[in-house]
Length: 527
Length: 94
Image (cartoon, rainbow over all chains, first blue to last red; front, side, top):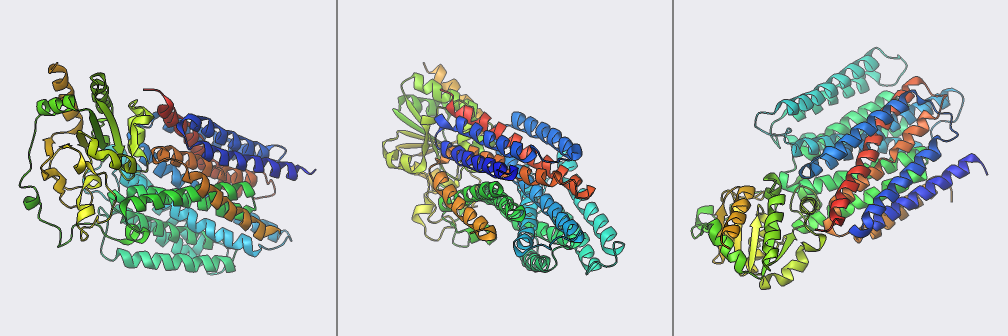
């Protein structure tokens, strides 16, 4: 057999190992093994590519060493609360790699054609366009998602030193790089290239536009929807043009620039509550970018892996949307917030009852079954370890404690579960929404910690509410509800929550971590 | 069945396989699933290495391939390592 046949067989093995990886990911018992199976698949694919190939190692070695170092340090040091940021950023890296491979493949086609080989066939042309488009949307969209999660994009407050460095560094590099390249290649480059000045100008302009859009300190600005639509049309037009004129490097970069602007605009206007959807969607894009690259270089392992990641992202996006009872287009283009029909907060909250740690301690000790509903507030307060201490303390006293996690709690799918696992809460104690809702009536005390919209009964009772129809954790069905919250301020949806004023609800106004510490103290003192 | 149609067949079937497999992953493990699929999308490294394995191409392509290798390697190494870190937390007994 030829060496290419061996190589393709190795790719097949790698693809199968990736599928096994995902299959074993279904249970914590097998998931660790699954993850390393995937890594083995990756090693096989890489080995098969470089073995026996006439490699030019100069730049590859630098990329591998630097990349491995960055990846390793990030993976070992990242806080579990910062997982959404990390995954958000990593999605973008997949997109960036695809864009660069697309550019390289385009030059390869050029070189081959100039040397008397065949011109690019239709598959290559379309795949190059798709790679540039999806890759750039993924990269710049992910950068915005990362920036919004790390709170340095579209925020009004003063940035910290490191945030300034990253934020303005990225803006400066994008704008300066695009202008320098666009002007150099567009206006002083080879005279024969078609529409050089037009495409060069587009590269420079889109770089500046990306920088400008990132500088805006708000989610939305006047005319954003028009600019978005314009960028989308321009990107598609450039795609078509790139298919017709497949060896034009400058055109490719113009496509990348305009698609990048589209990525920025699509992501920047999406609100904080919808971040889980955005991250999942970008995850899917990064897979599709990889698959497009696979079509471009005719490589099955890229196509299969890209399709797997793409499917995973689409699945997660769908399940997030379902968990909010909103359609994709509503998440991407809609504006969420209170309407004129929203009841007045003062009216809703007129019967709110406040409580003390001592009273809570007494109720918890007297309970048989306690359910904790964590929300993003728990992550912000870094309260997961303290909550775990309280859980252990109550278990010692014969109280059954469980955790009910809403699918969209936190800022990425499964975020709360990871935080609780980090704090050593056993896997069996993490309950899905549907399971726990069936048993909620038998729960003595339900402790809502930093969650708001996901326990708002309005979702089930008021069809006019912005969250109408969203599945919720039915905390209100528990015998007693304790809500730990700093104030009565609304959640992401911007509407009041009648649960806080319900007859069986007691509010404890405090920072999540401090509150749980006080409760632990009170439980210890009472015995 | 060769060329484009073959590749498209593989793509479509892989999406279906992906959907079926991922369907069975509980919401609790969705974060590790995402970081794990980040790692898998680092497979683009193969694309960049293939470019680096073409000595006939101009230097510029090798530079682009080197940068692409950097991004893909961050994904591969970072993705698998952080997924492992998380999954160990889930397996640990309380």
